[in-house]
Length: 382
Ligand SMILES: *[C@@H]1O[C@H](CO)[C@@H](O)[C@H](O)[C@H]1NC(C)=O
Ligand SMILES: *[C@@H]1O[C@H](CO)[C@@H](O)[C@H](O)[C@H]1NC(C)=O
Image (tube, rainbow, N blue to C red; front, side, top):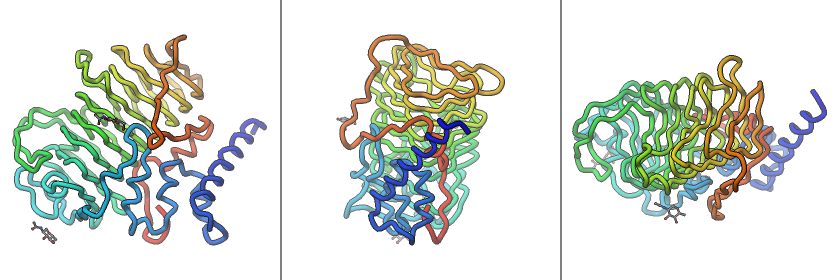
């Protein structure tokens, strides 16, 4: 190893240990493990994962979000309903108490959904999630699989955490329980893992998304204030779309933060593709691509900051298109960026609730090492 590499590793290490100590001043001999884990924890995770009692304090998570979503404090409080999924079955029109759809669509107001045990849920129709809903898969293995998947339609203040969503398929039009608990007609839906339609203040954290018929995550039709963090996206042609279509001007106001995600292996393109709007894409790891990693059209504005791009051994090595500014990105294996030259780099202009420290791209490997669904053992930290 060169001196430079050693230097970077030391620097990442120092950064993490300092943060761990700040989080818990009592950290000492007792928590050697959490110190070790702390090495791999980014700013969002450090906020709750170091607490070995996280199961008793699940709502602590709501204050850990960063980026355009801000803090999810509207999702917690004394009026919060705790709901446990005990039944993996699904009825899109008349959901049974105990199923995911009953908790996510039928119950109104603040609800925090957990799962009794590991389960595979095959949804009969897209799941329309109500405002102020948290779906928290921590501690169990929950798969949303093999048919319809998640949709956030005209709703706000939603957290989706710790789900495996895969093999999603297009859905024919039909009746389904809407986010207000009333049955509504829903048109044809593409096979995306998570689709946002006119949604705002949405936090998508630590999910594993792969192998769907259309894309993995679409942010469309005037959706904004979205943070996409700590997810693992893999095995997919079209990964993430920000902005509905070229003619949809309301997406000019779209603001999305994409941070600490792991893209790959076998992701082809759109990580993300942006139309109109603004995205801050920071500290993500790109493990190859086929066509490109980041792209855009229709005068979007995107700041790609301190990401690690590892080019595929074969195929295109360049990526990036008009409207994209690269700052502090690191390129390996011959990767390169065709970025917009000159002009002002558009700043995210975060408020204090939204802001976070973007770290050196050399630390991205360790900051994204636990992306996707976390393995949380019964006895220790997550
Ligand atoms: C749903 O089920 C739970 C647990 O079995 C029960 O406590 C609750 O009262 C039920 N709610 C309704 C509306 O039936
Ligand atoms: C987005 O967030 C900002 C800052 O918190 C807020 O002022 C704005 O109203 C939000 N927009 C929507 C559509 O919720």
